[in-house]
Image (cartoon, rainbow over all chains, first blue to last red; front, side, top):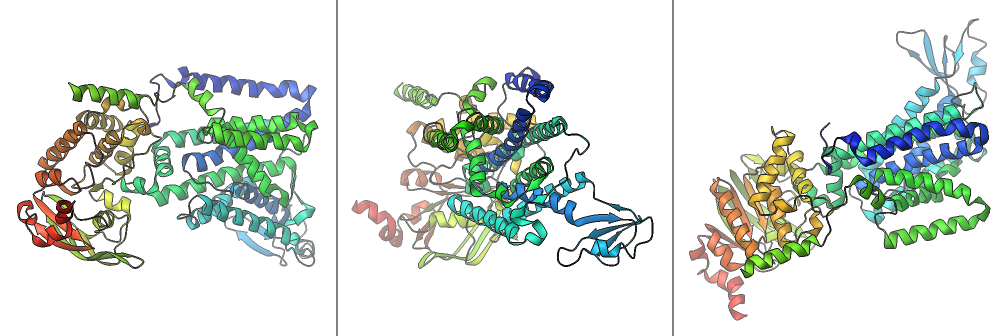
Length: 388
Length: 241
């Protein structure tokens, strides 16, 4: 892969940031061996922390790299979650037609895709009377629901990305807040489909065990894969263009960058990642309610990314994990813990625009830009030349 | 390179920024575009470069109508431009700034070749030693040089420079002069907006004068500067000052 990010010139496995990431990964892989025996609850906390790390880092790609300050990220997460949840609730595969439900024969196979109605008597139950003996009825594979969840979130990202192309700053934020609230209202307002505030039951990903270890490793794998993918993207020409768009859309276009294409692409990719995380999380927590997209949840993800460092994927991810873990550690402080994090967010915005962790990671990786006093040095040099 | 503007108009609300401007550039020309503040110079450059779409008229580049194209599509057709106030990507390094246009506009160059070309251009512009610095740490003049360097990465046939000499240290101004004359000698065309009369009269082969969105004079600098309409509209103001 050709990378265009600043490089230290060393082979990547010798770079301190990769060595640190490798050590962190080994620790993350070993942690369940201890926690599953001594504190399964903390295993749960880590799974949730990884979930937020995916959301915070993918939001940082959208906001920190591409400059698209969206409040709709949790809505895309919810689209992924509800897609897989609704597929589990309302879609079945049968070896014979029901004759009562809306159904599609799958080409080349003796299978029907059956959509269960949400109003009136259950068409599948009614259809069983007409179905031949030995007809098999399956739930679609959970993996297909998760993949579809990510894809539909990506499609929603495409639509929203195209709609908000010309919106900037506050307008983009307001539009995406409105989108998020409309989605939440729809989920609440259609309980016959989504079960609304009663909650939508979702099948667990690993029903054969009560251990959280398989869920832990799955969420960790999604986090690592997401981060690697986003790093690849950010260090490719796409990342370079996104940063140019963030700096100045008009100037980027004047330099030949297809601003529309890359802005929409970023919305699609980050929405898919949020949808993927949401779809898996739905199968982990096994119940969904509209509360997953209330505005404070989005605020939490933004706070995680900003406190970590919104222009660094790793810093945003670590910020997400640290804050989620800290929220658990400070649980005894009840509402005050939120006040503490609110204050921390304000202080970060005021005094550390690049977050609290990103500068540390920059130092670790040796990618700190040369001191800005260089400007003065070059001016002095120029002055000497002129003087001479 | 053939550029033709046919009756190009652009208005913003009640202000007619360009009023049926027609202009033709052929081959390698060095055109100075002057006029009082608000005469429509930057609007004209923005309209040619695709930042604005003309309300009326056509812009034909090498036989193709480009007036409805997006800015990036115009750039890909060989038009490069700088901005009045420099718009380098401030939180990106100088080298990254150079790579953006090189990678955005398709070419046969490989990664190594692109970087070598970038360093060659930066050396020519005397800012190669700053290649790993963030653009925001550069002085205003150095940022202007960086923008000029970005243009060369896409090898454009037509370069539109908006106030390249404004606020630039005399030493850097020499570099910009050398840049323009060297690149022009390679067969490239320029349209240069400038309020720096001595520079623009020295450099230009042809001067176009805009006044309230109309071209009031177009010809060799020596003749244009004697034009009574120009003196009244623009040069006269300086004399009064």
